[in-house]
Structure formats: C-alpha cells, structure tokens
Length: 116
Ligand SMILES: Cc1ncccc1N[C@@H](C)c1ccc2c(c1)OCCCO2
Image (tube, rainbow, N blue to C red; front, side, top):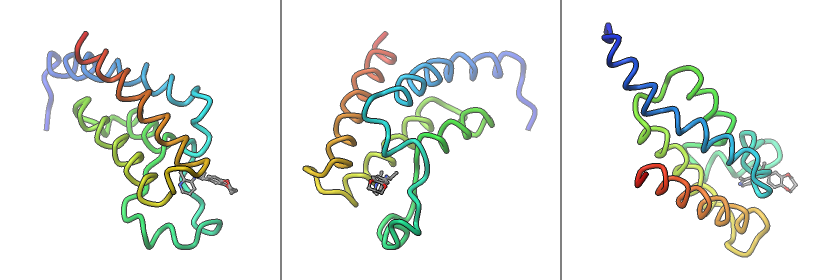
C-alpha cells in the first residue's frame, strides 16, 4: 500500500512523542521488571497465564520497525504490558508495585502529550 509523502509525515508527527515517552519509561527507576521479555524458563507458568507477553524492548523494536501506525497502537501495547503485570503479580509484590508506579507515570505523561 503506497503512502503519500504527507501521510508519511503525519505518521512521523503522531509517533514522535512516543519515542520521547519510551525513552523516559526505559530510564525510570522502576523499569527493571519491564526492560526485557519475561524469561519463561525462570517463570514456567508465565506463558500459560499471560497469552500476550509485552515488554519495553519489544515496544522499542516495533516502534523502530514502523509496526505502529498510530500513537494509540503504541499506547495499547503499553497498557497490555501493565495489564499482564497486574494479572501475574500481587499488588504488594516488588514487581507489582513497580508496575503500578510505571503505569501511573506513563498515564500522566500520555495525558500531557495528548492534552498538549
Ligand atoms: C514483569 C514481570 N512479570 C512477572 C514476572 C517477571 C517479570 N519481570 C522479570 C524481568 C523479572 C522480575 C523480577 C525478578 C526477575 C525477573 O528475576 C528473577 C528474580 C526475581 O526478580
């Protein structure tokens, strides 16, 4: 499907803030549980419980490879990552707490981005 130049420019404008937010998420003190895919040898039940794993490195690759057509596609993968975290981890566990902290941070940055 050939995209016009204007559409390509519009897509880049839409996704540019996503790179900025992803930079900040990767640099966050509580990003450590989310930097790489969950190791299913380390957590054998993970694949059974979590049907669609997602992590920051996968999101970065998808963004770089032009997989996301809109900023909402990008947002959906982050929300999937946070839902997976709540599904598998207790709220008061270290990973559960990190997930809530990262989601709160993301949601506030996303609102700033959309609300301008
Ligand atoms: C986001 C998530 N959800 C469920 C399970 C794991 C994870 N993250 C992975 C990267 C992880 C988190 C904590 C860990 C860990 C690995 O290494 C084993 C030792 C304990 O500390």
